[in-house]
Amino acid sequence: METPLHICKATPADAGIISRIVERSIRVGCALDHRNDPQTVATWTHNKTVEHIQPWLTDQRLYLNIALLQDKPVGVAMAAISGKLAFCYVQPEWFRRGVGQALVRDLEGWLIGNGLAQVRLNSTRTSEAFYRHLGYQPCAETFTVAGLRAIPMHKGLTPPS
Image 1 (spheres, rainbow, N blue to C red):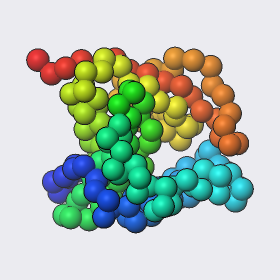
Image 2 (cartoon, rainbow, N blue to C red):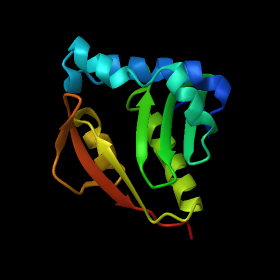
Image 3 (cartoon, rainbow, N blue to C red):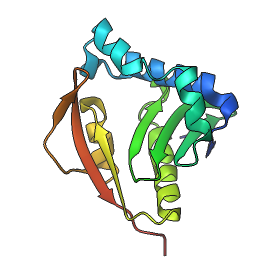
Image 4 (cartoon, rainbow, N blue to C red):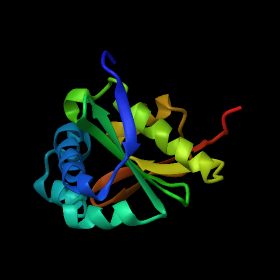
């Protein structure tokens, strides 16, 4: 990446941009999964509105981060204290440029800092290669939720030495 990327904890004021990044990333970047089916997209995005996101930003069990490039938001991700990586979404024009990797590494650091030794997630087909590149491995049979194939994955976390 040619310009410095800044990852920071998202604040309640970021709810609107988080919602827009997530919806755009799903609509544009995840077509392999939803095949442009309006009902599948609507089901996937229905709980990604500002009203749904705002409580996540004040819940101490959750950590939402945001990636900024020259103060412009380009990606968001969220993990839970239980060790689940809930999502990682990047503006489509920033795919494959290190934004998602930086977001996930920051979430992993937060989980390590909270004493967790493993992280788990449910990947889509679109994201599977990305998560494999970061060291995640499938750990259970795939399943379907809301018309989407979910691939359970996990990764051991090791604190920095």
